[in-house]
Length: 115
View 1 (cartoon, rainbow, N blue to C red):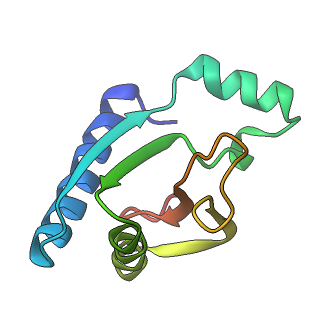
View 2 (view 1 turned 30 degrees about the vertical axis):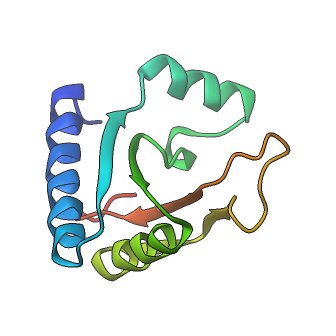
View 3 (view 1 turned 90 degrees about the vertical axis):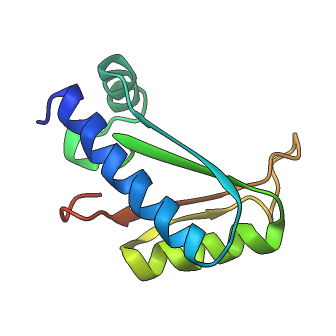
C-alpha cells in the first residue's frame, strides 16, 4: 500500500531507466507515466469482481514511438529489463480494435519485484 508520492517516485525511476535504454539504441520516443487513481482501482475491482491483489495496472507507463518496428523493438527492450507476467500481453497492432487503435499492452515485474 504505497502512498501516491511513492508510486510517482517509482514511476520516475522506471521512466528514466526506459529513457536511457531507448537512447542507447537511438529510438526516439515520448514516455509518460501515471499512478492509477484510487477510485479507478475501486471501480475496476467492483466492475470486474476482482480483489486488490488481482489489479496489475496500479502504475502505467506509455511509450510512444514513430513506427510499428520501433514499437516491437521497445517491447523487446522492456522484456530484457523486466520479466513479463504470463498471460498479460495484448497485441493491438496485429489485432487492432474496431476503432483501429493500435498498441502493445503488457505487464512486467518491475525493478522492485512488483507488477
